Amino acid sequence: MEPVLIDTFGRRAVDLRVSLTDRCNLRCSYCMPEEGLSWLAKQDLLDDQEVIRLVRIAVTRLGVTEVRFTGGEPLLRPGLVGIVAACAELDPRPELSLTTNGIGLARTAGALRAAGLDRVNVSLDTLDRETFRTLTRRDRLHDVLEGLAAAEAAGLRPVKVNAVLIRGVNQHEAADLLEWSLDHGYELRFIEQMPLDAQHGWDRGQMITAEEILHLLGERFELHPEPVAGRGAAPAEHWLVAGRTGPDGSPARVGVIASVTRPFCRACDRTRLTADGQIRDCLFAVTETDLRTALRSGADDEALADLWRTAMWGKRAGGGIDAPDFTQPERLDITVAIGG
Image (cartoon, rainbow, N blue to C red):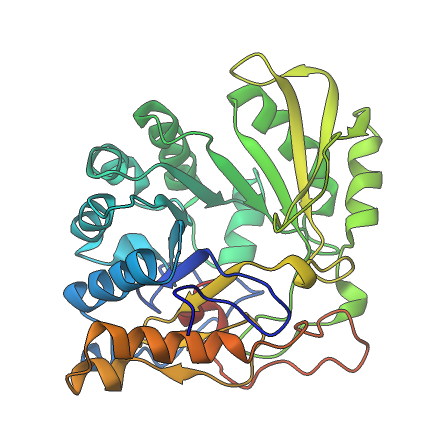
């Protein structure tokens, strides 16, 4: 097989999402039930050296150039800084990023930057304390805001903010979120709510669409589509905000990830490693390939690479999320253990 991750449609996976834990310190209503989930047993999770080994195989044998650490909440992983440092020493060195809810980032941003982390994406759906408490079932807004400021101070730029709008809850904050992000030099991206909740309560009719998001922003801002040659594999479509500039003096912009209404499957370049060592070729895949068992049974690097190549070769044309008859994957911990 070729020394890359390629599928039958010619798509090449160069972007690896690594879930480091299924645990989270929030209970976001669109992610999991208030009582939480049955977390994976420690022995079922990949240990630090296993994570590092699989990332090394992906980078040195399979052509991966970008690695994003996710969860659950990756800041809850005790060995996170060491994992980042080891991955930063790989040759060729991949781009390293982190998706986090921001709680604990104020304490760790400096160490993560020193270890080699390049940038962060922080989830933040509201600027209102009570709304935050309603959405996350925790009173931790201040911690998230402190984490964002610490990331900026540590040089983890661009600091990106990911926001999900929920009908009847926070959609009226769309323009406020953009104003606040522009004032702080953060890059805001709105994400259409996806069927990733463990309780399978997602309702297409309740989703705030990309078209609605742009309408809400247009009530206060003048937006223009960013002139680009093509969207490529980038999940976000960007709009320039007239009259505003970013920290570097370039035109300010806002992104919208229309995962449901305008999916980007045809150019997808992602592969996913779950917290328990499974390869998923798509966020909405209904099957997985077990690397953990092979790894712990003594498989060498090339055997593991071959398993990974085979897993990605069979990737479907699309996740089907835009189809009216879409069926959500059965795995209950889909958001917290897959690596979104």
